[in-house]
Image 1 (cartoon, one colour):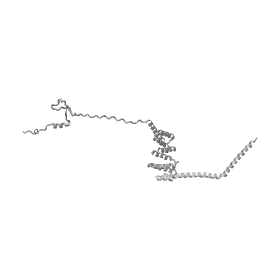
Image 2 (cartoon, helix red, strand yellow; image 1 turned 90 degrees about the vertical axis):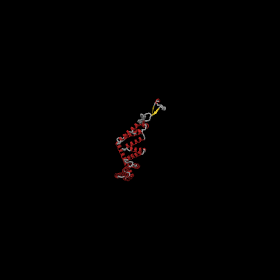
Image 3 (cartoon, rainbow, N blue to C red; image 1 turned 45 degrees about the vertical axis):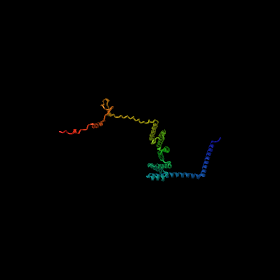
Length: 293
C-alpha cells in the first residue's frame, strides 16, 4: 500500500516541475520576441501620446476658431472663419449664420448651397439638425414634399429638441396630401415619443386641428343655398281722373240739321280758354266811343 505522505510529495514535485517549465517557456518567448514586444509597447505609447497631443491641439484650434467666430461681425468675417478654421464647430456655426443671413435677405438658393455644404462637412456638428430643418422648410415652400420629408425625418431621428417640430411639419405634409388619418397617427406618435419635449403643447394643438378637419370631412356641413328672389310685384298704374275725349249724346237731343253722330267732341280743358276767346265776337269800336252830348 502506497504511503500517503510519499504521494503528496510526488504531487508537489510535479506541480513545481510544471511551474518551472512555464517560466522557462515565458523566458524563451521574451528572448525570441523581445524586440517585437518592445516595439509594440513603444507604438502603443506613441499612439496614446499622439492622441493626447491631437486632442489638446484640437482644443486649441477650437478655441482659436471660437474666438474668431465670436469677433466676426460682417459677412466677410464669417466667410473667413468658415475657410480658415474649416472642420471646427465654430466654422460650422459660421456657415449656418451665413445661410441664415441669406434666407433673411431672400437669397434662398445661396442659403441652400451653404446649408448643404454644412451637412457635407459637419456630420457630427451639434447643430446639424438645424440645417436639416431649414432645408426641409425650403423644400416644403418650393413644393418638393419628398425632399422636405427626408430632411424633417432626419431631424426627428436625431434626438434633437427640434424633433417634435419636425414631426409636426411631416404631419402638415400629410395634410397637404389629403391624408388626414396619417397626419393624426403621426402626431399621436409624437405625443408618445417626445414626452416632456418643450414643444409638446404645440404638437397637441396641431393634433386637435387635424381631428377637427377629420370630423368636418366625415360630416360636411350642408351647402348654403341662397334664397330665391321674391317675384316682383306688378306695378299698379296710377288711376288719375281724366275726362273722356267725347261725351255721348242721345240722337234725339241733336238739333235739326245736325249730322247724325253718336257723340259731340268736347275740347280739352287746356283748350277751353283758347276756344272761348276765338268764338267771342270782336268788340265794336263804335260801342267803345263816348256818346256825343
